[in-house]
Length: 97
Image (cartoon, rainbow, N blue to C red):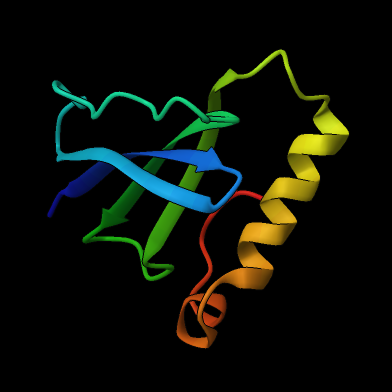
């Protein structure tokens, strides 16, 4: 019995989300650099526990936000990214909103 952890990084741009790297059972050691038009960067910690019947837990943490955009503007970009996602991605949406 144990816990598996996947740490992932995502960058929000005006065009949507871009993956920024991931690591299993350790911190991300070589994350991809954020794009020049990055609005904000989030890290996700996804844990699965062998002994929990609830399965997966997911926590999000904002690690960087551009000072060029207000919180309200960043929320609108997040909503737009979800709206523009494919139907399959919308069903399995896991990005912070």
